[in-house]
Amino acid sequence: MKKTTFNTITKNIFLGILVILITSSFTSCAKKIAFQTSTIVPAARGDVKIAKDNNKNYLVEIKVENLAEVGRLESSKNAYVVWMETEDSMVKNIGQIKSDSNFLSSKLKATFETVTPLKPTKIFITAEKDSEIQYPDSKVILSTRSF
Figure (tube, rainbow, N blue to C red):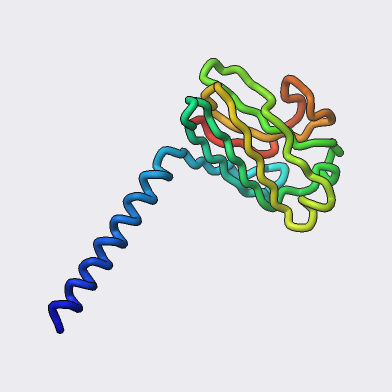
């Protein structure tokens, strides 16, 4: 009876370790980088996850919380724009984080996902008058360190 209990416990421990190793191997390919504290919106927090997919593109996932509505900033803007700096020091507009009253103001949370063939080295967010802008025009709201 004791031998059966010991074998069951040993099997459960081994199975638990195996599950942890398999799970960590899937997530170890992705880099997770936290945004630095913002001087413009100090309560805003978030992180960026970068992973390479099977096509050798980069999947960029951003999660942000406590990000004030863009219209409530000191100098009223229309959109939060996400920028990517590449290995060539090129800065590229990769999209907009929506901040409409139904989505962002109730929970103060936002997510963003995109795929790019260029390797990102830094991600930052600005508040702009136009989301289609090609170069950042205003102050940086959130930024990662270079990675």
